[in-house]
Amino acid sequence: MNKDFFSAIEQIERTKGISRDALKTVIEAALLSAYKKNFKSPHKGISISIDPQTGEVKVFVQTTVVGNVADPVNEVSLKECAHLAPPVQLGDSVDIEITPHDFGRISAQTAKQVIMQRIREAERNLIFDEFAERAEDIVSGVINRKEGKNIVVDLEKIESLLTPNEQVGTENYRIGARMKFYIVEVKKTSKGPYILLSRTHPGLVKRLFELEVPEVHDGYVDIKAIAREPGTRTKIAVESRDKKVDPVGSCIGNKGSRVKHITDELRGEKIDIIRWSSDPRSFISDALSPAQVSLVELDPGTNTARVYVPEDQLSLAIGKEGQNARLSARLTGWRIDIKSAKEARGESNAEKKESTP
Image (cartoon, rainbow, N blue to C red; front, side, top):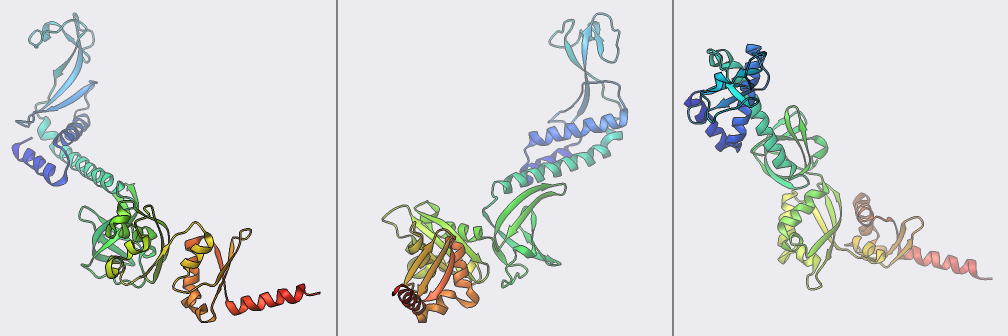
């Protein structure tokens, strides 16, 4: 080992964040592997030592101090150990240097390959640990390139794929654009960490609100439920843990500034902020906003809510292609059957006729 090699180690420590002690351990293990491969030594208990100042590499074998040597491979005489400090006694274990004269020349290339492999593994483990802690959080990345239908995202320390299932159909993934992504999962693979990113996950909306709304971040406002159709519309139900804090107003912000930042990040996706309620009738009624609801009837047995709205609110309650009703049902957890108030009156009259003798 020369000084240039140790200078490279110091640079790796600075740029890769791998400690020098960890690298030293990796290198010693690699050199031990190279020694065993090239010299076929019969000895057991072999160890490698690297002088951190000079870079000198030495090979040692652990032997037992005896009076008369019967096993030259694993034993050493007390007389041969007379020069050691501190003094040794019979039965002690000592490390005796057995460094081959040409160890450096023969094993250098093999050791280098193993060392670089171990360093790459250590770096991958550091990256995995860092991103594993950020699972179910958001991260900022730059669109690097496209590989088929996959989008390659540069996360600075590692590249990750945004698969077609996690892409929003209405979004333009322009090369060089910086976007925020939700980390769905982090897995270890033989090729390094695999980070599954998403732009469609409801968790992305939740984390964006935590970033933009201090009351959500600090726990004064709780996000109870999210129903999302990525790229078009999201409904989010919020509850205040502090009577002095308006959960809906906090999320909207002054003149809509907070929710606008989130909508901009989601490339124009509309967001409805609903006040959560433990009363299913009230919650379902608010969830169908912006439509006005006249009456909500619940059938717990079938988990169905029959909702009546004014005639002119029927299409608004249902929404384009049924989206408003669909999102409201997912948000509240109830099956929602929407009818006009006129139908309610008709059903009521029919019931009266049936009950008339």
